[in-house]
Image (cartoon, rainbow, N blue to C red; front, side):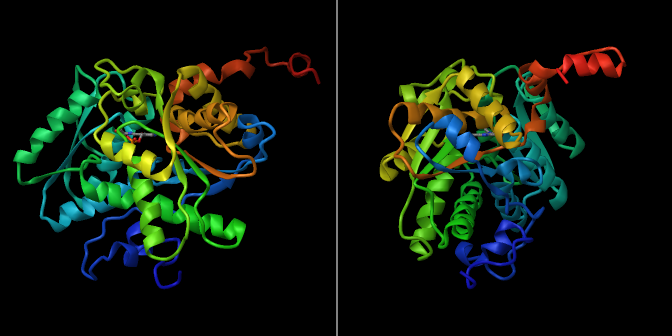
Length: 366
Ligand code: F0G
């Protein structure tokens, strides 16, 4: 392990420099991304899979510098853009990719152009792109239409596309799998993958990247088994599950409001090669999983993360998860990204009362 990894405080390209086979003079643009916590979640396990005694962990990707897993891929895509002499980067986004691109673009001194579906990007994500100084183009259309426009920028030699159709994005995001194996090693004795890897699916880049990452870690001799990849789309945007594009995808989890995933086939390959599955969860199941992580374990993620937790609950109820298994649910983004939904769905215990101690105690049954 010591020959392939570096101290945890560096970004993913430095830490996994050997696995990524980077030349010494590679220009790394980093915000010290990665090294996110893998948190044991015993109460969430009992909530999602009562009686199965799962060894459940959540990988909290909200702890990345811009609050989502996108930073793992963006450090690589933007470094490569610098290496290639690009002056601009461009992406379509449901919000997180644009926040990440804008941050790494600012750090690298590149112009960042982001194309967003108007009115469908969570407030926190939009505020990030604004602060990092990106050119923000909102279109009357959805993510899939924004990505179609972004693909046309390939004609301009000074511009790098930094969506996950850029292979460096997927390579960078493999680092999540490397870390999980190492972190499970510190809990369980030896580096190993989980038995089941639950993950939200939108454009399907991340499930593709994690599967490639586990395989890469096995090729490098660090692990000897692979996990089942269990992906969850939102029911209103379940193109892979239903085998057809959604022209009007809809879900409250705007991060995964995508009707024509760019990595569709690669995600199916991850599913089939790993012996896993891709299914969907409805918005009620997403909200339930999202709130359970916050209320039972103190981990505040963004709504889309409810797809992996809600997905685990659904799969367990269907008898698809073996008892005593080790399971990782990826929580892909930080809860503060979407304050509007948090306030709307989490307010059950909120009251407005007079400024009077006794009244407050009565309200609290104390
Ligand atoms: N979770 C979050 C928080 C996301 O932002 C995304 C995708 C996903 C899950 C799904 O990952 O697309 O690799 O299957 N967000 C992209 C964006 C589309 O533009 O920020 P995926």
